[in-house]
Length: 144
Picture 1 (cartoon, rainbow, N blue to C red):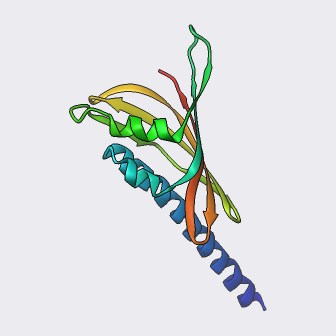
Picture 2 (picture 1 turned 90 degrees about the horizontal axis):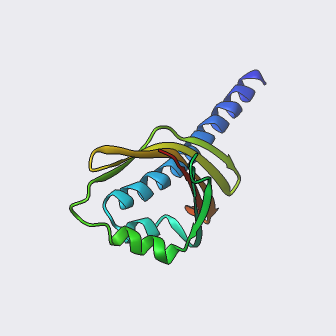
Picture 3 (picture 1 turned 135 degrees about the horizontal axis):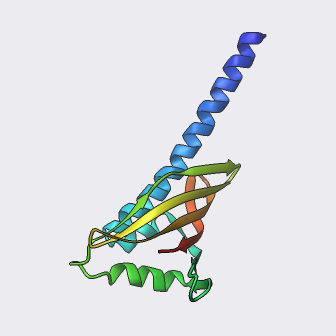
């Protein structure tokens, strides 16, 4: 009986780890498309009605919440000048999953032309439909 319990928890742990890897791969694909300026690649991992928000934090101007439509977001990605170098470096992933919902907390640093621009946290909410994870909500903080 004891060995069945151990095997059960071992298999449960492997299943949870595999799910977290699927979610992380979805987020990594999002950033691959972002860094390649490829909105088509990003769309593959995003829901059609994804919600996008940003929180700009400033001690002088105060905090500001802004909304962006998916259409505006994809257009802004495609319109990034090819001579502009940028990189969003994800520092870690904290992934939580409950059935068909996942939440990812991902602190980052953003570099523009190889110089530090700002940092913050991305949070993603994902929904698993059929066998595919899709980003349904993205909010980030931005501070210098």
